[in-house]
Image 1 (tube, each protein chain N blue to C red):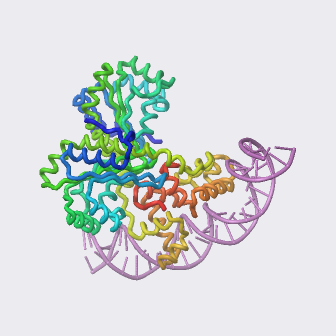
Image 2: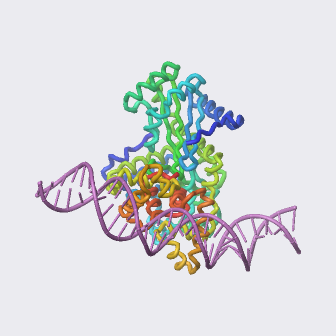
Length: 233
Length: 233
DNA sequence: CGATCACTACGGGAATCCCCGAATAGTGCT
DNA sequence: AGCACTATTCGGGGATTCCCGTAGTGATCG
């Protein structure tokens, strides 16, 4: 299995899409799509082999907000076969439109996560019967997993600089206290743990809120976790 | 962190270790090991095919604190080949001892992450030459990736708290209110927005906290964002 | 059909958090 | 040295959140 060095590509965007196209050819898929979310930098990388019509329609309809394949795979560890998705209203909406644009309904999404809360989703589709799909997928599931990891690794490393630059600089004390807050401790508890006044704890918390541009502590914790500054517990 | 002793459930323990053993046989490896950490549930799961001598020595020496294979792969997206690890003092220490216990120095660790900050590390080793190792790994890297995902998925879903967190059932009102809280609104604000009493808002929040096993609202928001129930804003 | 449970809704009062002001110590720049 | 800036520490008091009790509605079940 050959892997293209995605980082060394002169035209990165084209290179990614060529990579996805080769992936389709190799694994007998109609289309492939990658969506990478980096909450730290507030960026989303998207690369697809779909036609421009579907891309435009998808964007105009804001399907990324309701797309069940994205929702479900964001919460899953294992790959998500689209046939197992709940037949919700959103599902009908997106898949009906996709079908109108000639996109087959057999597909799956492989989620990959990095250490900073970043998520990569590699989706592949093929227009065929259920039995044929099962057979094809069974043969390439492992390679797909590797491909997903490889793409996400590349994208995240190419975006590493922006991530670092975007990171707010919370002091060690602020991070320490925010981590305890996320762990469910009260300000008094934290003061006892760190052997300082609960008033001081509150000052650090206020400072953290300001740096994260958050109005409340829950919002600050949410942002800190989304950006990988602290870990959920 | 509580250490879950899967030995308490003989069938489960046997199941996982048998699985790892089969994995070794199938992929021509000497040993396989899985370590899974769920910071949310505060639990660690471990399964290995190593002999009892090495297991005991590893635990007594507290190698999990300095093991470079764990350290490096916790920060990586892609699999980490042990040959690329920095030759630090800790590396010498652990690998010298491992060698004394008859464990080959060719190996790699595949990291897998879930949406809740949980990490699974699947390591495999084989006593052979570098060239032979490269050849073997090249053939099975994709399948190893799938195996790692499969094990981590199984383990995380078998853990009670993890199961609760992975399959939360917040009511629509609870989600709605939690989303507003994550957006930095106060209970009074939310009450005004939804045209209900701020007391009622608090009840839904309390209910959300209970369902997410969170002690405080910031913790609940952190978990909800980490699980993708709501979105950071 | 009665019992039970989940969801939604409200209020009183205690506990906690948050805004204000204030002080000290370290760091970097002029 | 003087100045500006940040990190860290603390207390008072108002604002907010949290715990307890109560209650109506609808769904499920024996």
